[in-house]
Length: 173
Ligand SMILES: Cc1cc2nc3c(=O)[nH]c(=O)nc-3n(C[C@H](O)[C@H](O)[C@H](O)COP(=O)(O)O)c2cc1C
Image (tube, rainbow, N blue to C red; front, side, top):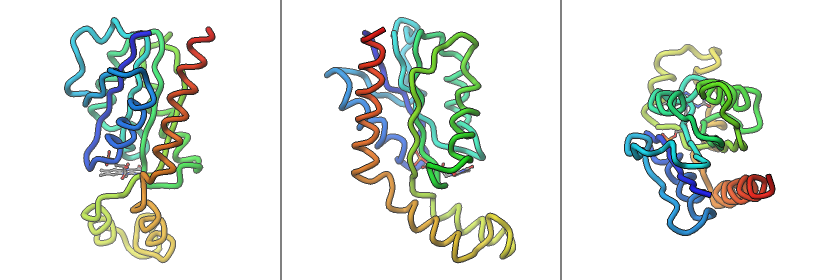
C-alpha cells in the first residue's frame, strides 16, 4: 500500500505528530509539508493529512490540499489549543474532513493538543475583555498552560497507535 504523510504547521506541533505517524508506517514512507506534496500524489493508496486548527477548521494550506485529494483513503490528524476531547475538537476535525471531495473514504481521525503561540495569546488577551471566552481568565490561563506541554510523549505514542490501527484496518479490507 503506497502511503504518504502530509502536514501543515505554523509553529511545529503538527509536524511533530506527522513525524511520529511516519515512524509507525512502513520504512521510507515520505513525510512532507503540504507545500511539498508530490505531483503524483494521486498514486498513493492512503494519505495521512495533518492540519493545525485555525478558527475551528483546517488551516488554509491544508484546506487547499484536502480539496485536491482524490485518493482512495485519507486519514486525518490535527492539533489544536483546546481540549482534544471537546466538541470544538470533534467539530474542527469534521470541518476539515468536509473539504475532501465527495467519495473519499476517511480512514480514521486523530487529534491532540498543541502549544498555542504565546504571541497569539498576548494578542487575544489584549483584544478581548475579561469575561469574553478568549479574554484573560484563570480558566483560559490554565488551558494555555496545559496546551503548552503538548504534543507530549503520550500524544506521539497515541498518534503512532492511530497510524498502526489505520494500516491494520485497511490491510484487512
Ligand atoms: C490564527 C490561529 C487560530 C487558531 N484557532 C484555533 C481554534 O479555533 N481552536 C483551537 O483549539 N486552537 C486554535 N489555534 C491553536 C493552534 O491550532 C494550535 O496551537 C496548534 O497546535 C498549532 O499547530 P502548529 O504548531 O502545527 O502550527 C489557533 C492558532 C492560531 C495561530
